[in-house]
Structure formats: C-alpha cells, structure tokens
Length: 160
Image (cartoon, rainbow, N blue to C red; front, top):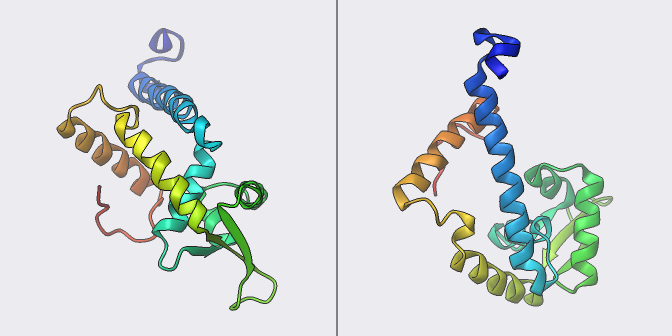
C-alpha cells in the first residue's frame, strides 16, 4: 500500500522497518513495565538506576543522566525525584558545580536493581524468540543505525 500511494522511490522497506522498530519498542516497554511493577519501577527508573550503577562511583550529574537517558532535563529530574522518594537514589550537591546536583544510587537502589534485573534477565528481555546469534545480529544492525545518528560519544566498537 505504501508503495502504491507514495511510489517505489519512497523506500517502503525503510518505512516498514522503522514501523517495526517502533512497534517492537512499544512491546518491549509494556513487557518491561509489567515485569518491573512488583518493584514499583518503570523502565525509565530502572534505566536510570542502571546508569548510576554502571557509573564510575555510583553517581552522575543530572545533566549527564538526562543526556544518557535521552530525555529532557525536566523528565530526568522527575525520574530522580521519584527514585529519591523511594529511597533508591539520593540527590546530593555536585562538588564540581555549586549549582548542580548529583544523583547517587543508594544501597536500597542497588538491591532493587539487582532483583529487578534478575527478573528481566529471566524473561530474556522480551527477546527470547531470537537465538543468541540473532540477538547479536540485531544489536549490530541497530548499532549501525545509532552510529549513523551519532548516538555514541566516540566511534569505537560498542560491546554487548
């Protein structure tokens, strides 16, 4: 239908692929949010905790967190505020920036992250329909798209 309406030059394969990626993302988020509900976490809050856990010292400036989550600073602030209310994150002054704030993962945040991650891992991150080799192939294809959009800080090879 796309090709009939817009013509072959409109790249119907690109539209079909983009639509499939967006639909898959919606399915993933619904699956993740359902798996994370017992921990009173949404996927964005899980992702923020993961970024903090993977940071060098368990804390990040709010501007960095916002950039890495690819959300508006107001959304990052709301996410951290909710995590702080749950006791999973502490907001502390940034010693390198008198006006800035750091989000720091707490021991309770590390504990809930470990439990929630175990549940997502057990569910295969909703990718259990793919073989291990297919997951790697999917990652590599999407990595190529992300690099084309300059989604990485450098051009070194991403790792799984």
